[in-house]
Image 1: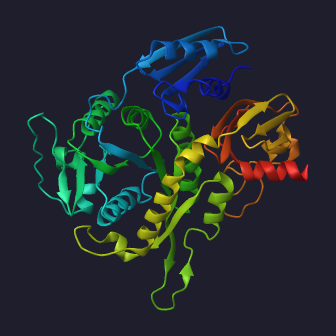
Image 2 (image 1 turned 45 degrees about the vertical axis):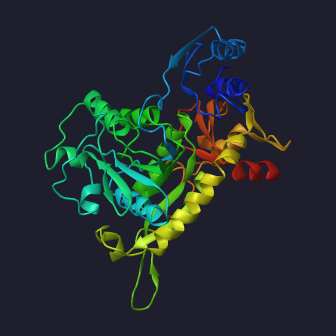
Image 3 (image 1 turned 90 degrees about the vertical axis):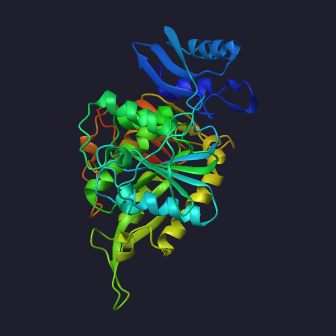
Amino acid sequence: MITIQKVRNALSTVPHPRDPDKNLVTSGYVRNIQISDNAVSFQLIDPNDNSCINTAKEVVQKLDGVKSVEVKVIASPLAGGSLEKVKSIIAISSCKGGVGKSTVAAHIAREMAKGGYKVGLVDADIHGPSVPALFNLKNVHIKTNNQKQLIPVERDGLKIMSFGFLLGDAPAVMRGPIVTRYIQQILMMTDWGELDYLFIDMPPGTGDVQLTITQTARLSGAVIVTTPQTLSLLDVARGILMFEKVNVPIIGIIENMSYFLCNKCDEKHYIFGENAVHSLQKRFGVKLLAEIPLQPQMTLSLDQHFSNDYIMLAVEHMKEALSHLDELKSGVPDVKFDKQNISVQWADGMGVTVSNKQLRLSCRCALCANEITGEVLISEDDIRQDIQPKEITPLGNYALGIVWNDGHSSGIYPYTLIKDLANTS
């Protein structure tokens, strides 16, 4: 059976034409792999090398079961755009509104700028831009330069652009294609200049708008913001899977509103549940960058001068994770499966095998386990005898995303869990 992972593995054997130490996959040149009736199609950012394009097509065509291959060569997202001098582009995302994503994104960008970095922040939430209010920026009139690029607003060294500056108080009543066009323009037509980091405050969700951003800007990675509430945790998996499918590594998770710290007794009150942090790490296998409590300081206008220890910690952990992104990409294992087992093999020679049924039974998504109590909601009797994967997607160097033949697809299986299951079986 031909799978997306097999196609990715094949394309990872094709070296980047200008950097032999990288391949087409790790350099982010492969996009939108699709398989239909054993016909494979994928987008390839133009490497300006016809032999590279032909090789990419040939290695996929040689895979067992492939009937045809279509390569759609697309222009580089950075070609001719205003992002050419931006070193790292980081998406701050959530799949559910109301978790404080925009507040966290603004605090992180501000903290990085205070640290001496050249930083930009773009508010890409066209339907609910929050950044102008967070920085107390009112009645801003955006100007353009001689190249007709938008000139971002600067606040204490931080460059800011928001749909709120362009729309004012008017509602954004627009259909999808118009929204995506505006997003492309605000990203590519803003004069960012030289930046160390550009943070994108993503609109909530995992639809066309979010995919447009991943295709317009070459993202270095994504940070997912959530809260301990069950409804928020349900959507974390969707966000992880969305970014991994478009080859954007997950830098880590920030848990906002983790607890309330009493200013009288310094006791932590876990209003939305106490074990959510451990649940996130165990279930998704990704790094937790910070636990940010409910605190009045997070509601202060960012035009005031103050420091936040929790944001500072998140920034330090994020910078550390960014420094290991190349290791994350190179740590993706080779995965094979059949009707009985799943085998995972790492580059260092370590390999494990676990049965399909055992791994399916270990799922701890919200459909298979109670998010609050941890109670397992499925049993062996609920798992069909012929259970096997239809598609497996390695999620960086930390987990597998699996679509099973029983229709289940929301589970994420950390490599630590797979190793533990293999050792105990």
